[in-house]
Length: 226
Image (cartoon, rainbow, N blue to C red):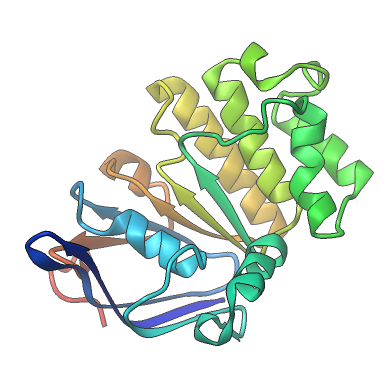
């Protein structure tokens, strides 16, 4: 499902190039869940942005579901995010002028995969069935994140990239939201790569890797990941 090989990324600063990723490699199978941990500024979000085609690596290769991102232009990368890769952020990023139902179906309609029965099932499972006519500003943070998860899964992506998806929620609400995400991902055989600073949440995933000074390590082994 995902193969990232020898990724390097640096950003230009007033003091010159600042390396963020220094030869990072990882792979995921379909349906697998993986936690990416690391200190603030370690490159976790950069890694997700590269895999999602929101930014380009300086060196290395990323292949998602057989597609080499290095061969894609902006339109091709947008199509990848529309059809194959789902993104969930802690900021929710809902469209304020659309109600819950319209937000839920937005991504699926873009991908040409709108399925009424699947959307209705998601709304029920996510506890949103009684809020479909409401707008984002009328929802709690936990409800907004449920809408964001539903919007992503409604399009049936092969890979979900979640960047601190419970970061704006209290611990209890965050646990409930993560439970729902993982449960629905299992049922749809969707791979989930989640960035988190929480070892407690990372332990919920099938595998964990850790970014330190731009390199990937396995927390349980303490050595560079191969």
